[in-house]
Amino acid sequence: ADEKARLESRIKAVLKEKDAVLVAHYYTDPDIQRLAEETGGCVADSLEMARFGNQHPASTVVVAGVRFMGETAKILNPEKRVLMPTLEATCSLDIGCPADEFQAFCDEHSDRTVVVYANTSAAVKARADWVVTSSCAQAIVEDLDSRGEKILWAPDKHLGHYVQKTTGADMLLWDGSCIVHEEFKHRGLEDLKALYPNAAVLVHPESPDAVVEMADVIGSTSQLIHAVQTLPNQEFIVATDNGIFYKMQQLAPNKTLIEAPTAGNGATCRSCAQCPWMAMNGLENLLSVIEKGDQEVLVDAEIREAALKPLRRMLDFTA
Ligand code: 13P
Ligand code: SF4
Figure (cartoon, rainbow, N blue to C red):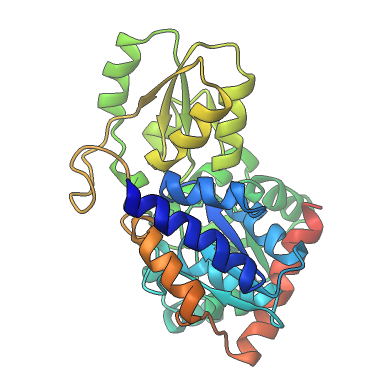
């Protein structure tokens, strides 16, 4: 406990010293989320993270999350230094969508408007017409569909299916998925729902279709947190990374939160949902990167310029 307190107070001091602000995702360790809140940074979903880094005056943005979040911060803020506790924190959606294969796919279907999920590399975004996150995907696709556009969607097939079903848009889907959300099991969820019949089921749309179909609320991390605060239910079954429980419990201390059943990922915990890449963010590597300034996110200038356009479109659309 002493060591943790020492690390936390050092991090607070060094953030100030280096004119740096900490932006954390809801899936990171609660200690990191708390630090971000206590130091004037923010804890947010991926869309809000992008917006915050873009608006804050600090000259260094420290992104606790996964690689694509750091890259997005850099693309939107090329004049700032963007650091991450470790550049190795990636995402299975990003890994499953290599830029060269993706570009070839786009070339084969050049009549389609290219919409990519934020969970992709800068090089993939550079080829896109639009970037979306789970909080705005539906609204953006609906708008494109209403203008008669046919869509090429990458990389998350589950989110893609969900958006296709709710909007009726013509969407060609890339075959990618999130290794964390893919583990949620609808059979187990049915059993749990039988035990807690009054619980509202909250599901992140990266989950398999059968799980999404059982949801009372489907949304981004921020939208699921909002649901816990606003729905009248006393109990909630939550199908997303369990890092989200910190904020849910903080904002709705009297509600009962239950983890949706998974097969686990084996790497960080055996029977719960936890992203192994988000879990790479810790107090020690956070302090180290702020002190040393290594693990800096850099994006090639040409790629950056091309990726900025679809990202800006998303921010303008959701403004
Ligand atoms: P949100 O945009 O909902 O924060 O999701 C990001 C993510 O990586 C979900 O797995
Ligand atoms: Fe990627 Fe899934 Fe981890 Fe989110 S939870 S960062 S989608 S691997």
